[in-house]
Length: 173
Image (cartoon, rainbow, N blue to C red; front, side, top):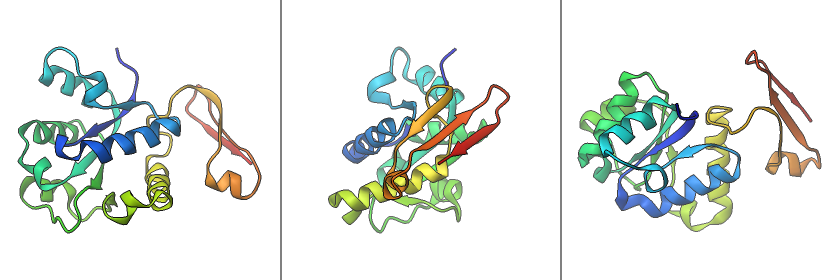
């Protein structure tokens, strides 16, 4: 049985920005599943297992994603399994329609295009927003973790967060 993770479902046309988002989330302590690192054996079997072990699936929204059969399989399987999905808009001005438009509906999405990709501070800010949405889903390790982020650095404190065996959480600054 694989460990729980956050899966990234995307079209290869957006691989550069997706790998950057993936790296930023790994740096923040998330266990991530991305095809270029974990895809082995049968593609469909690997994708199904990735969805089944995901605590959340990041959907890389673009026209190319909508047109990809494998992307559609991943997204629809995540919905069928009731795995929470978080849309990442990867194309400026793209408005999802058809099956992808139905999947996203009126939900909030995170835009990773334009200035967010070209300016490091904006990129880091958007990743921080995404992390607030993800919360502890897909976080690596158990017990007490020390997390240093912009909020902790701004007030000079250390944020400590722990998850007990019973699933309870504790945070102290």
